[in-house]
Image (cartoon, rainbow, N blue to C red; front, side):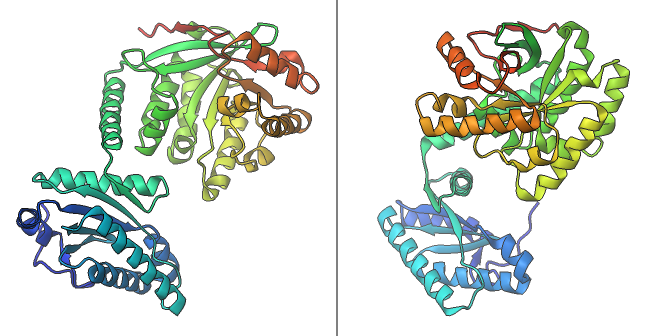
Length: 414
């Protein structure tokens, strides 16, 4: 139980959350067309880490003064840390004008040299109604959505909110399936240009046999830190079912964050290899590194080297023009899965095609990395890939997957 004493925040002299909770319904009764604005400072942690907590406090005090000055006749609240709330009876147009003035005042502060960095904030705005907690949740999520999408402000959008609710339902179902050992698995073969099966790719689905690792779901699972649970569950199950999967190499998806955050992962791999008599050379770890930040480069490179030492092969998933080359420059990568949007965009775009060809040429000439083109939908796409790769890559070293060539076969788990 949270206990808050008094109604005033001592640092900023604003009212606190206790005051907002007590006055919320009185305010919206007086101003029936009120809006709740949730705000936080985007760069507050950076300020504290690089300029000290005294400077961080100065940021908070100045920001509080700016919003208090401009949002007259409103409840201006410091919630905690760098989070603020404003309950205001002003219209959206007036709120927009107020934020413009706030930015002008921030510009003036920057010109004066009082602060070493600009005050940057995100805000979520929602119409205030009698359900205070839900109003807070909606405004808070709109703020979070703005932050995630590099926007200053996000006004409440029903579609965004419904998508968030559906995401929560999806996440709950996935975790229930994991806990009940109810995920389903399918094998999808990857072929070369001569229609020879080269790799068995493992596809993870939920208990209704819907794919849980398509692009939108993958982002949701990563954002909500659920991928590690799936990765660990998948790996143990696949290792235990290698005989059912068949001979040859097996490609398994794993998120790069699972690799660098699971402390005992390498020991876990070694135990599974021994327990199920699996040859590590048969396993291809398919890893998406596109959201890797610079601070993680060394960690992931060292982890890749250790995995290679054990005997695993490594595939970089969803390769495109933003995939960091630093990994390729420091580790022997075996495969790249070329992102479907990346290579399909090159069909009718000569600039994109030249960029793709340049990368493929480097991988083939210097690194001997084998490309895997996914989502092949028809014969024309297959012929296109054969044509652009013909001058640099042997046909047997071009791998393909997709509805046109590959069929999914359910793996019997029990």
